[in-house]
Length: 301
Image (cartoon, rainbow, N blue to C red):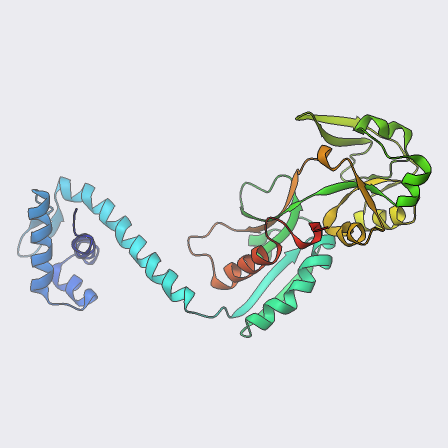
């Protein structure tokens, strides 16, 4: 196995265009740098540098080998910075956007605990359902519920979004419990409409996706508002558990056919691709991942 230190010294010699400059950069003697390169050449059995009194250039082998040494040097720098970041405290201002329902119900309550943990950090948060341009608007992080996160951004999954077909116990006592998705044709199905979609609910029947046509006397574009109508006993609906989890836990709502409802959305933290993710951004992502996890608290019955 080759000595990685020798490879890093060689990379510095090429980058600094000389033994003396590399020695100053590394804080060692010129002779130790020269000996390190000579030792590396001997171990490889090949000459890496063309040497003259005034000029230093790479041989053909040296040019190819230098690419690998550069990557190793870069990785070593990144490892050093990673260790430094682990020992540092997040500080500064973190600009965050979060979708309205999830941001209000779960991100906002988490922010206080997060800021208590990191006293040198402030947050500027926007609650919105519009599409946010991170680069143009200067956001560090966007937290949203989606089925397909944008390919141009890095998407870190924070938690699954489960939905439940639910109504009040009194509704089911009066109209009966549907035993299959097709039985919904006999029920008042209150519909959440988004981007014009309406009238088709998605189920998993025997491992196959099935779209079931439904109808009812209410169509609405807000899940929280829809949950209030369902709690009033007027009908049943497919609702996300991050909104109705407490109502299911308290038996105010009853869930049916849970095995037929696929997980087709997740909560994501979205951020711009960067070689070095800022410590403040990483801290919030890790905090929320820890707080929500693969089995979020709102799904515990």
